Length: 244
Image 1 (tube, helix red, strand yellow):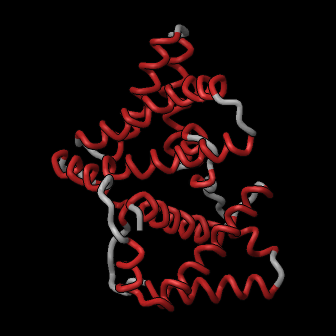
Image 2 (cartoon, one colour):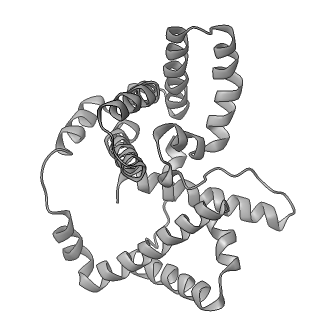
């Protein structure tokens, strides 16, 4: 599993558990994720990812500074520093600063580069959106080691290794068996469809699942239980995000 996906599923899981337990006591906590991996661009991703943190920093740090300095270059510096602060919030290490600066610079460059590409290449709207999403996934994959690997030298080695050619599917089949891979692909497809439908209906996947017909809801539960039995780790381990 990709490092970013592991952090996402881990963090999303325990925040949803916290929200569910709070609802049992009549308290509704803030939504912390809104289908971030379906975002059309990097700016939208950060509006959907770790919403409670990013919204607080944007409202109380970035926006007050942006109102004071209205020219272009000071605002660029403010955006980059804001993302460096988001990175530094996760830990006092250079890799988090690099992670924040990388995302901040790309946030600043995303729209100008997109405008230049639109002028150079006249392509259909669906093609442009698909290309934007592919660029987003590449950015997330490339920046994941910056967030997860604290040692800078090791982080650079991991980034260099990402450009090597391997055989991940053969390794996955060897580790899980053909049935396990097939079962996981079907389950992932069902979860992806649930996320896409929730995105279109502007709701949450869990709320969407409640409104599904019984056969679809029971099939989804069956797949989730099956995935847990096949690939679940039944040893006691702390949540990944607790270390940040």
